[in-house]
Image 1 (cartoon, rainbow, N blue to C red):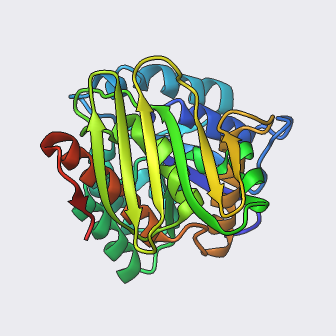
Image 2: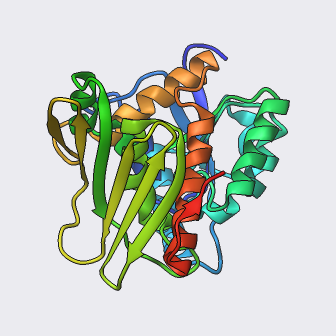
Length: 300
């Protein structure tokens, strides 16, 4: 594939598109991520989802005008030219269908958050990727927040964690998937996979998700629709607790995320365990169920 990868983008309906393209394509950017350029894109979009279709024109024009990205009429045209794919469609409901079309070209794929909004669809993407030997990864950029990563490096014997963040609910996106994915991703970054159940307490303004891990640890996610709209987490260890800010530091989350994505694009080795990604989707799905029933829900 050469030293400078030709990167294709599928789905021009999120602010991440311009952020990713600027970091990759502008060598003068203070946090430039080397190794490839976004050269071609397919706008896509979900006609029934306002937060998708209302953004397409502006983002498409920005990528064409500022970064000379070629715009194509199909996913297949993008994949034919590209060495690797950023699947950035903001609507997780379309990821499986779009991935199936991308998979035919056997190029490495980063799937922007959320991986899917359905556990079975997440498993299906994993199985297709495995069967066709396609490197894939997916995550919220909050996994790479400086405050979180710096504190994790010095944290030993972690016994639990409490994350928090905004958790707005929007039409067409199931329950907590739209913004809940960020603070859930932070929780799993700290505790890893192994959650066996989740229970949700909810009212109009807040949600509190309580997860139990198979080794007895407890992890919580507080979702705010009122008041604090920042991200953060408490990391509990045997002898102390540390606070990790989600917005601290100077390096953009996106830059740290893209560095990991570019390693996968170059080496074919995903930087995140796909089983953890699938468990995150199942966790949110189960939290949505608990939110409706008021009962604790087992993940497996």
